[in-house]
Structures are given as structure tokens and as C-alpha cells.
Image (cartoon, rainbow, N blue to C red; front, side):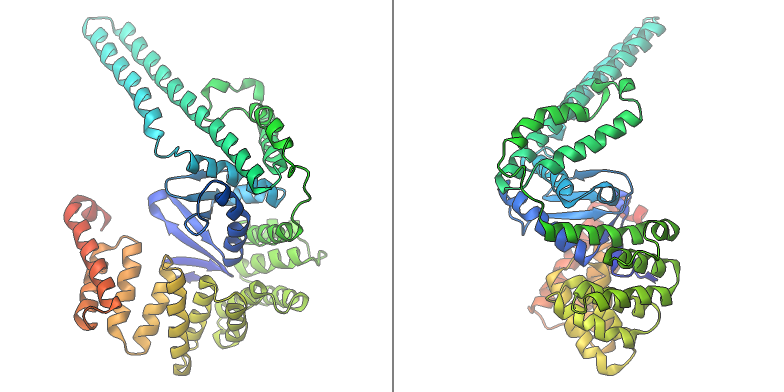
Length: 451
């Protein structure tokens, strides 16, 4: 089940992000759910849903964060801990608050004063030591470090409170109930009680304690006409499906099979078990679960997708083509599903399928050019159809994404020499070559280390 640049189990792609020491989970159904649940919130914040998105991180901790730009990162552990879609919307609203208030950009305003206090204490402490007062000097430095940390933590708590308030406004403006935000904070409050809230120093935390957050937000959220609004049944259904398939992917198979025993014939159970069996290396059982999903909903593109993926990774690419073609068409040519379909067409090793693979994969990268596995498959399709120049361009795209500047530059140079000048592909190859070369020239030490 290992792929070049990606490890895939069923329809979920895990893409390594070495710089962040984390990995991104990409799944068509999950991304569609995130897009739909977050769009009203981004709009309420004055942001365009086309330019903003929610990304799932493969991490079992209960966390979400922003790191610049208009991207909200949600840990898989948070999705597993949430009871419903509305709770996830509450978390997303809070993180959008950070984006709207520019907190990542303003972070330096909190770090710089704290750092100044710490440095000043070190200077004074060293001076005291030089004068013969070793203990006094050490005390000055320790006190300065404590003061600097307290200064930063106070700044962080202020930002978190600001994001809470902004998130509440966005929920109310979007007509989305704030119950999920409050109940998720209550869930976090239970964790605080579990670890002994009486032993937690509120002034040494990056966030206000959950009880404080609930108290500050309750009145505003409960005053909204949307507070007692009935949950969106369709969104909750999608959430339960995504949560089940995610458990099947990220949790040990034994855990999933305990949570979703064979006696459970719900769609969610079949979904979770399909992933669990596939990951554990039981293709026949995984295929049986996928068949049960198809029987329940024959035209569901995500069920067709998992059926095709299981067949593909079981070494049956020819059998995988029909469900993956149906899934691609039924999902309006979703780029992730189309990439899997293109992969299956190539894997048949049948020349008859290569032209279709090329067409499907070109469409996939046209809609989503940030998927290295899609570029790898497109490069393979170009190579198989005799277009070595564009195969090199696809390799340059892929290498550029993973930071392999030498390969990116060399492949782009080959493409430049063999693609007609001033065409869109030629211009793109030129851009990659120039960017890679400039990066190598500007950062020779970093590039040598990376190699």
C-alpha cells in the first residue's frame, strides 16, 4: 500500500510535511465536508471560501491551529473527540477568529517584549555574577525568565479570548448555533477536571481556562436566534461518515473492530470496517464491507471510490476501473478521486487506457496542483505516451513540492529544451527552473544540508 511520496489506505492520502514534522490527511469526502461547514464562517469573517480552507492533520491530540495565510489546521484527534459537526464548526470559528484578527502576524508583538525582559535579566544577572554575587545573578536570571514567560502567556491568553469572541460573532452572523462551541469547551473542561483543575495555574497557560471561556461566551451565543436551531441533519450524517472512516484509517484495526463489531450493520460500521480490514491486510473482508456500502447506496461516489481503491491496491486494477470511473464522474471530477482513477488506468499496463489516464490526470492537476502523487502519475502517463518533455515537467513540479531543488532544476531544464517556446508548459518549466536555481544560489548551505 506504499506509494511514491504518499502512503495510501483506501481513499485517504497521507502526505508527508517534514518541515512541520506532521502529515496532512487528504480525503475527498472529508475536504468536501470541511468546505461546506466552514464556508458560511469564512464569509461571516469577510474572507472568500475560495481562498480559505480547512486541512486535516494526522495527529491524535485534540488541537487546531492557524500558521499564516487563510488555512485552518484541524488534528484528526479533535475530529475523533468531537460529538457532532456543530462542535467542529465552533472550533473552526475560533481559528478563523485568529485569521481575521491577524494574530499570526501580530505574534511578534507578544514575543518581542517577553524576549526583551529575558535578555535584560540575563545581562543584569551576568553583571551581578561578575561582581561576585553568583547566587544573586542566578536569581535575577531566573526571575527574568519567569517574568518574560508570564508576559508572553498573558499576551497569548488575550489573543485566545479575542479569537473566542470573534468566533462567536461569526457563528451568530452565519446563523449557526453556538451550542457546539460551548459543549466542546465543556468537553475540554472535563479534561481539566480529570487532570486536577485545582492544580492548574491559570496564569501559566496559553489559553484561558475552559470555565472562563464558557462564562464569557454563553450570553452572546445564547442570545442568537440560531442558538436553539435544529442541527443540520445532512451535515451531521456526513460528519458521522467521515468520523467512522477516519477511525478505520488512523486507529489500530482491533480498536475499530471493537467499536464497530460485525453485529453493527450501519453504514458507519461498514465504512469503518472497510478501512480497518484494508489497512490490516484483509482484502476480501474489506471488499465485502465495500460491497455492503454499494448495496446500500449504489450511486454514492465515495463508496464507489473506496471499492475501487481496495480493488486497485489488492492488485486488481482492471476491476477497479469501473467503480473509480463512476466515482470520478459522480463527484464532478474531484481531483483526488480522479488521481486514483488515473492510477488504476496506468496500473492495468494496457496501452488502450493510457490516453484516458492522461486526460483524467491533466484535469486532476488542473483542479488541484498541490498533490505530488498526482504529478507523479501524470508524469508516468506522459512517459508511457511518449511525451518525455512533459514527463520531465511533471517530475519538476513534484520535485519542487518536496524541496528537491536539484531534480526540479534539471527536469525543468530538460522540459525547456524540448517543449515549444512561449507555450504555457514552456513558461511553467521556466518558472520552476528559475525558482529552483535562485533558491539554491541564495541558500547554498541549506540546500547542501537538505541533500
